[in-house]
Figure 1 (cartoon, rainbow, N blue to C red):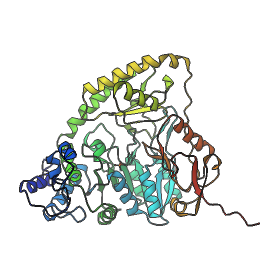
Figure 2: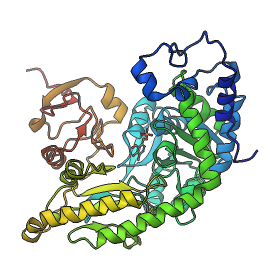
Figure 3: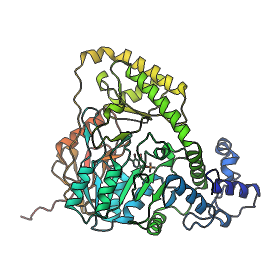
Figure 4: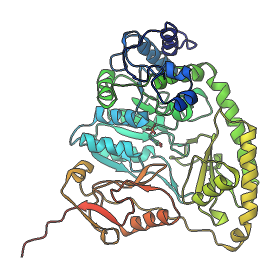
Amino acid sequence: MSQFETPLFTGLLEHMKKHPIQFHIPGHKKGAGMDPEFRDFIGENALSIDLINIGPLDDLHHPKGIIKRAQELAAEAFGADYTFFSVQGTSGAIMAMVMSVAGPGDKIIVPRNVHKSVMSAIVFSGATPIFIHPEIDKELGISHGITPESVEKALKQHPDAKGVLVINPTYFGIAGDLKKIVEISHSYHVPVLVDEAHGAHIHFHEDLPLSAMQAGADMSATSVHKLGGSLTQSSILNVREGLVSAKHVQAILSMLMTTSTSYLLLASLDVARKRLATQGRELIEKAIQLAEKTRRQINEIPYLYCVGKEILGTEATYHYDPTKLIISVKELGLTGYDVEKWLREMYNIEVELSDLYNILCIITPGDTERETDALVHALRHLSEQFRHQAARGAKPKVLLPDIPALALTPRDAFYAETEVVPFEKSVGRIIAEFIMVYPPGIPIFIPGEIITQENLNYIKKNLEVGLPVQGPEDDTLQTLRVIKEHKPIR
Ligand SMILES: Cc1ncc(COP(=O)(O)O)c(C=O)c1O
């Protein structure tokens, strides 16, 4: 096997070149039966490989041919024993990881700032989450990862846990000491599951944080589509055999996955893997250099701060990904969301995410100085335009809510008898729904938690500045769904 091969993409091309007469789905038949405007826009190449799991094209659910070979090449490239492709994003891969280790009543150790897919899997599986507080950065108003010390403490108290889930690196590119966390967890024979949504590239450059597989973790759900160059929605699940069984993980992933797997997505995983394995280091090196230059330029702009290696030094900030530009804008007296909108309206620039205090921009092999120069130019103008209010205003206080107490397992809360109460009258009640700001999709409340005034204030603050608060049935947030209280009959 050579990493220059692309068995899946090549197999599709060979099939397409035979021009078979298709009496199978998809019914658009290479675009012929499709809306012409869309067909012309997408192009016949893409439509000709929008195929389905017919004999010559293998089947993701029981791979024996080109998909099997493509997955084996991916496993070799990512340092895994087995790699499984996901057409349901990293969310699908995360759900499979969690559900493959934890069933009803089982404990799973997770940081509280997990993506909603982890909590969804906990609801589906009926597992009990044992939350670890992530380290909070009060200057930036963001949470980092978890520390080896907190994992050790959690495992001492819950040695019967079925897994430890780690986010490595975080959305903002910060990584903890994953190797140490793996060593500690393995000393308790507990597998480590890594949410590697923001780390598809880290395996391929020695200056980036260790990848899950390099650190010895048991599974990782890795968004190749986010930072590895494949099409949106395509991800992989890497498995190291030993504490987990690859066959079992594959079976669970298959249960969660559509039977109509997109070959466009699958082929894009195959070619992204080839590019990462054969040219990844040099491409990522270029992205790092470009990001470092941009960081230096941004840090010369008054009232802006672009986070760099000075953030390192705590156990939760053990390493970082310099291709992530976390730009703190709070000294300008603006929210990250204000800046996101301003950049859109004034310069046609779209950022990765914004929150109350920061914007996040990502630099990848797809960028050049043309784009980064445009960003720096726009940020200089921003600082110029708002410096009067920066000079006047005091540094805003960073508001971050505390983690509420969990009164019921998320599944029990989700399926309990519920009622709707006014938002303002919900303090002290047990919430039955998720509330999060998306992106990044980290819950402010998960089902089963006791509603606190502090967290309601945090939601209001996010709503006030226009950030996308999502999750509850009532998206105006006038009301919340809570567990029904049964009052004694008089
Ligand atoms: C930390 C984290 N985990 C998991 C996911 C889910 O990834 P996907 O969008 O590929 O389903 C995301 C998505 O933003 C994320 O930020």
